[in-house]
Length: 602
Image (cartoon, rainbow, N blue to C red; front, top):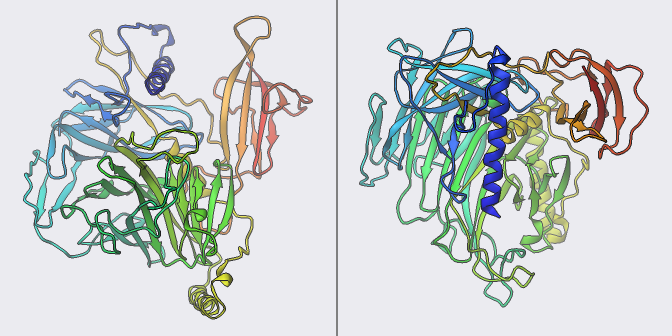
């Protein structure tokens, strides 16, 4: 089954590459399909279904290597594209010949050794909505806009073999315990000099520093007859801060962590190497959505553990008072309350795509690219389970434990937002309220500690929606394979005449099959989702053309080279048709609604 899933994903990429091949050709008559000689290739490959993706090396010389980048979202976006290249003298040009700045960094084969295989070239790309952009890569001596990343290794006394790759700089600190920071045009992050973990965050706009500490914890399982399994979570009490230590101490692994700090003009990151996980925090120095959040990747490997569950915890100053918000299948937000009278495991909830905590001043959102379990066991905390390894069956039908663990990458975005209506006294009043609530709980017992949510309805902000969209719909880089007879002229493909409103999401646009013949008809199914969002949070620099239109969407002229002749509302299953609209140029959707339409295009 797993092998079949991998084959399906590979086949899907082949379909995307063949479609992209036709769409980017300037002269469509030159299109030829050869099964044994593909035109494009993916920039990542998996050796097996159990391995993580590995980048494909792009060999550079004086002739151009073309790179096609696909943007799968319906908004124009500015993002960082990273590819593995063979030369440090890389030069990147747009379709019209403009040189783009490039940040060159190393691909690391271990915590302290740079790989000799190639260099990671990262460049900013402005991509059209649902479009394909074409870039040129050269090995050129005139690469003045290629800037090198500055790498620093904090070894904490470990005697490790180091390897540097010319011309990338590398500095070594053997026993530096001092806290340090990285920053971009929007954010400044402080890290612990001992653990390498995030400690605080400051938004450059308001210069207010907020505690944001990342911790890793371990849950065990009960010693009684019933133990944790595939369906049951039965911990042996609160999480332990460390795998080998039964008491609450700093994370305990066999060796102190190796911390790598990489700084550059386009992105900066901190990577921590621990025994059972590798944790990376990156910020992008870009305008728009990607520059306003933290990109977090945690690669977990707990195959040597027995009955352990690894969790990541965010500890903040936010006075959330035990109220947590999680999404329901990425569609709506549900408030959750912490109940002291319930066991610990009863306060964990599913997190399909996001969870957040908030007070009168701030909101902290954890966006995830994979569905996980989340909880808020104390005010200002968010906790998410990363991986579980359990040796026994829990008698719920599976018939075995969870012992097929693999090395797994977990991707997150952490977004800190400020309320536009917050005043300067709100933080002080919130803390006074928290102290008063704790005092009442102490006097009258734990039963009064149930937190009643005063806002039963909550929505993500527009920025939060777009952050989640960009996390779960990453750009796809497709290098053009070298051709003996040369590459035909290529061009950028932009299917939309403009960017769709930022609160609209295009769920699907596909051709409808004929009833009588097994061929596509002239009609297409358009399925749209309009999101509900919170207007009380500051929206800064969402994108170049981000706007909302009160639910109105103009279909006339929306598609390049296609006119809309008829628009007919349909049921979500497309089985039942409504009355065709008299005004085919515009449709309207209510917030939190999904609507389907049958279009006649020509």
